[in-house]
Every structure is written in C-alpha cells, then in structure tokens.
Image 1 (spheres, one colour):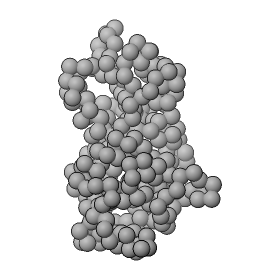
Image 2: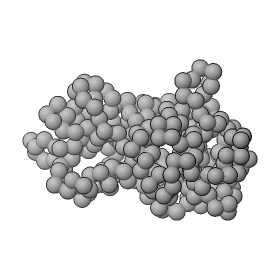
Image 3: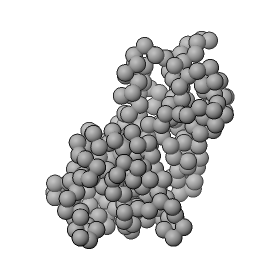
Image 4: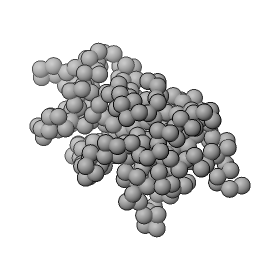
Amino acid sequence: MSKKRKFNEIKGILTDIDGTLYFKGTPIPGAIETILKLRKKGIKFLFFTNTDSKSPKTVLNILQDYGFFIYKDEIFTPIIALKEFLSKFPSKKSFFVTTVEVENEFQEIPKVEGTGIPDFVVLGDFHDNWDVNRLNLAFKYVLKGAKLLGTQGNRYYLAHNGEPVIDTGSFIQMIAYAANITPKIFGKPSKEYFLQALKKINLSSDEVIVIGDDPESDIHGAISVGIKAILVKTGKGQYFDPTMAKIKPYLILDSFSSLTELF
C-alpha cells in the first residue's frame, strides 16, 4: 500500500501554526483554503503550537484575523497545558518568568511573596522584560528546591523577519544544567504534550497526522508517540536537508496546501 493511500484512514490533523500556516506575518499560500477543503471531507483539526508569549485567545485572534476559520476549542498551547497542571496543586505557589500577558493568564495561581520559596518556577518567553536578573532569581529558587516548569522546548525560533532568535527551551536547559536538575517541559517536543493533544482531538495516534515546519519539536515529537509526521518546507522546514538529518519525517511536502493531494 502506498503512503498516499494510507491517508484514507486519517481522521484528524495536529498542525503547527507559525511557520506552517503563516510565516513572516503572511498566511502560507493556499493554507486557509486547504483547511476549509479538508473540513468538508470530515477531517478534525487541532492547532497546537509552542507559542508561549501570548495567551491562547491572542493566538486564536491572530489566526482569525489572517482569515483562518478556526474554533476556540481547537487551539492548544503550552499555556493551556500548564494551567491544567497547576490547577491540580491549588495551594502551591509559583514564580513566573514570562511575558505580562501570559502571567495574567494565571491570576488564580498563588504567587510567591517576599522571602518565600516557590514550589514551582515557570519559565517561558519573557521578551517584554529581557532581564537576566529574572533568570538568576529563577535559578536560585530551583537550587532551593523549586520544580522548574518550562513552557516549551524549542532551542530557537524564527522572528517576524525570518531571523533566528534564542527560544525558551535554551533558557530552560541553561538553568537545568546550572542547577543539575531535570525540568518538566509542557510544549513540543514533550511526549506528554502530544498525548494531551491526542486527548483533546479525541483520536488515537494512528488516526491522526502531525504537520509542521520544525524537525525537532514537530517531527521528532510526533515520532516519539507513534504519529505519522509530515514536514513542510516553509518556516524552519526550508532549511531541512534530508540527506544530513537524523530525524526522518514520514513525508516532506512543499507547503501545508500540498495536503490536499493526500486526501
């Protein structure tokens, strides 16, 4: 059986967003129309991302402003996963190194005060207050026993102009290395994040595909839980060299719109 024919059994798509559906502030050509076409064929969608500088509502608004037809409950971000985790510990206190917008999403979570030591250190994108002292304080808390929670594991991302920028995962690993601990990661490529995504879309691993532009977070993460992973040659994917890579996507497509050829 050809790879193409196997897609007749697929019921859902877990798709990355930035670099896959849009890039440099512009929708990928044909992406909006492709989602509409696949919806008509009965394909379910979950738009899951590593974006950790914005609230889930902002992520949804950005996509809708671009013209994508997407429902609120189809968005899954590390912020949602982190909320679900922290809600299980209502009495434990946290210290946040994130953007103000993201920290505002956790107003019901107890915060550390004064000279107290938090139970959790939450480290995410903090570009709106780029202060190394915030990282150093987080490090000190971890040394004193706080559990390090990372919003996602990306080493770098591509900025609005397409230039690479150090991402959250690199800062998390820096603190983890310095403190000699293992952090808990909530976004891609965490296996737990992919398993949560399957639960959200209510399908099994053999009923979905993952499509994304990042070999490490999207493709490797999907493979780790037994999901067919498709790399698109947009965003980070434009630099992927299959002859040099250790990570092997199930398929490589020119762009998200190429999906229509498979269904």
